[in-house]
Image (cartoon, rainbow, N blue to C red; front, side, top):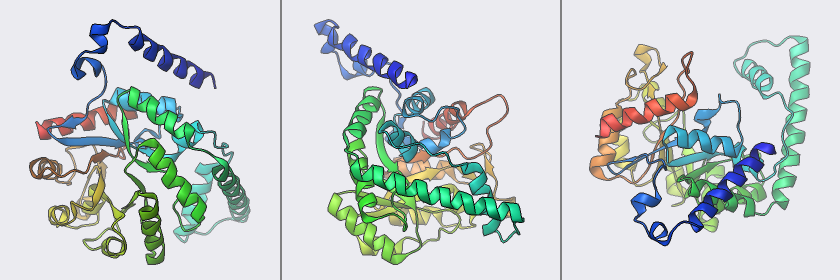
Amino acid sequence: MENRRSFLIKSTLGLVGVSLSPSWLQGAPSIIRSYNKPNSKINGVQIGCITYSFRSMPDQSAEATLNYVTESGINAIELMGGPAESFAGMPASTLDRRKFYQLMGKQRRGESLSTDESKELQELQKESEAYGELVAEWRSKTDFKSFEKLKKIYKDAGVSIYAFKPAAFGQGNSDAEIAYGMKAAKALGASHVTLEHPSNDAHTQKLGKMGETHRMAVGYHGHEQQTFDFWDTALAQSPANGLNFDAGHYVAAGHTDIMDLLKKQHKRILSMHTKDRQTPANGKGNLPWGEGDTPLPDILQLIRDEKYRFPATIELEYAVPDGSDAVREVQKCLEHCRKLLG
């Protein structure tokens, strides 16, 4: 609470400072008004960042997240649900997510669980379900003024929100929660919401139709299950459906036709997660940019030369080196983009 109070006071003082500035400064060119604000649009290519990249940072509040973004030099983002919804007052979870995901992963891989582990997983699942019901109830009563306020705070710092990714669009979410997520995205100024592709045609059709109703595009993300025609059914179902493509995972899946895919689907790509992964032959590693097999120069220069409109979203997934942090590594990713697009 103290962190938010301090942040809002500073934001207010900043606005007051502008209002009390001399008339010549208030009428100054945009280059002066935008002084000291981030700019990650490079030769027409919008380089963005998903705030998931900062998951290793100690403070996950909306205020701290904005600081990470601006310190990284980024001016446009895909915002995860956590920072925005906590800012809007969503009840905090007491679930031990690390343990929950660890046990779920072990079960999913077919590994045997001990008696104690099975009991703990059952308890965690019940706790997760109860929290889901609590969140759904909160969402049903939430107005969107807090999201509009957050949009303004980010905008005043020079950061726009082009995509929003709350955990509100899954098959286990109600239509009311889906509508809430789309309305929240609109209040934040986003052009689209994102989610993992559900691999369920009925669900992508429902999301597409609801997207049409709420005038909100829906971007489906994929990992190594992505193929050249992975999104075809969803795209045919609704003009609101699109791609939240992941270039690195596509390469790690062993596909060699990434440039053809970009050329074919560029009008339906809403945003593209960008990372440097290796091919299967080289181990599928997630490496510092410039060390993997993802053709980042070709990809970014294609976007630049063909004037494609979708943003390239930095997603930091390689291991943060000792002595560094996520902000410094995102800075390195952005600098790599500058070199490729210069």
